[in-house]
Image (tube, rainbow, N blue to C red; front, side):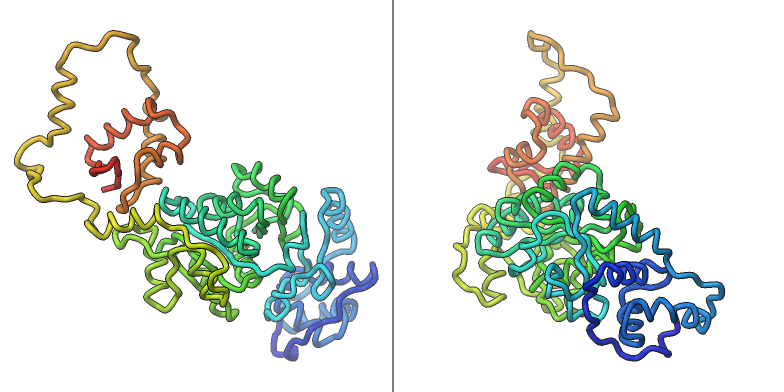
Length: 420
């Protein structure tokens, strides 16, 4: 559209009649009309009906001939599908629409809501991070979401795997909002279908996209601006140097929201984005108490980070994650004691009892990837890794030994493991 023909946007009057709602939805669903263009068209023409009538001339001036707005039948079908799945439309400015979004220049003209719309009236904090989260990152996300929920905040995230999923699960009891990139009825990734259903029952799912739309790459940055726009602050738990979580953080800065980040090990790529944010001025977070203090609610929740602090202390003692190296013979001087012990065990006569089952190489490789994804340079307790992976020790221990002998993980004193 030719932006030069349109004046600066003002807040449009919410649609009160069924005809107004149809026209609003037709306008925002019309080709090449995004949120910013919608608001500017409404400011120029005064109503969605008038904007639809003038859309062809605006398109022609922009060099788009034979332009046709979205047909009325298409939006009637969308509204019918929404009602069929129990979703409710929230138009900009009406009673269901979140007030936090109304000052954004690209505020969604309409949202589909499925679940508890009352959660939008509470103060909200976004908690986002890496999809391939480490065990330490997952536990930190859980603790932060639980603490913020108990302090009265709604936890907002994007229903992605990893940190997003853990934040939603930890906040189910206190209230969580999932902002989806596709239609509110389209669950992505599919593995989160069960979690999405729990959020529908006890939390809220919302989307600005049409019912039934499968998410595409361009929809995720659009989703992220809603995540940050809803909230007073965006908290990043783990994020690589180039990640969607940093897009959310940048949106938060543009929208005047607070940006907070959990620091990570400098050798862990999943912490690079968080460390960069902190270097550039984001508030460093160790617990939910730090978030509440940054938002002006000191003392609203008890600080409970002893377990994580213990791991941080271990990391400070040896930043490289190599344990106490004093008196340890270099690898080049001969086989490590563990490797030698393994060789002696292999040479000995086999123990009585059934032989260990032979698993397909692909299954073993997949389990190795899961183990390595959960580990980073910061040491993690082996029993915690077992709980995170939900596997019996008898299944996990041989694979840990194999990875250790392969030089991919390091076992440290106290039952701690780290990735090399």
